[in-house]
Image (cartoon, rainbow, N blue to C red; front, side):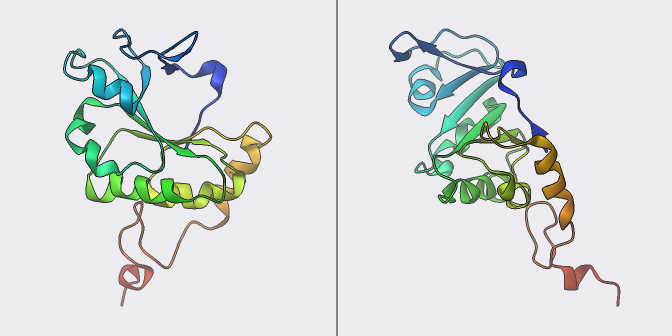
Length: 162
């Protein structure tokens, strides 16, 4: 799991003084809203590292055709109790076979790290009051789960030698 610190993050939102630009210029490591991406995807240069920010109400399967062009999909947790982004990540990894970075953003707490990892997130931007050291410890507490997940697809009973 990669921990993203805002000052060192190469990804930047394409915005202006009054909010997101309707038609941002193509720049490497641009992080676009879904609306911005839809406005520019037909003219956006192929191979340019590009990311999309998805609200947790969006059906990620609607982005399936665009996934090969995207290096990053940032999924939002507007509140820590709203877990729809877990399902989005699982669909991206398990059903759509997305291999790029899946990043958790928003109200992300240390307690969420094990499930973030199991559902397919590869990077996380913790809420400002959360500590990376605590998050790393949370990832190390339980590493062998009974149920299958995105990381280990087979359940424990099928992994145990007879």
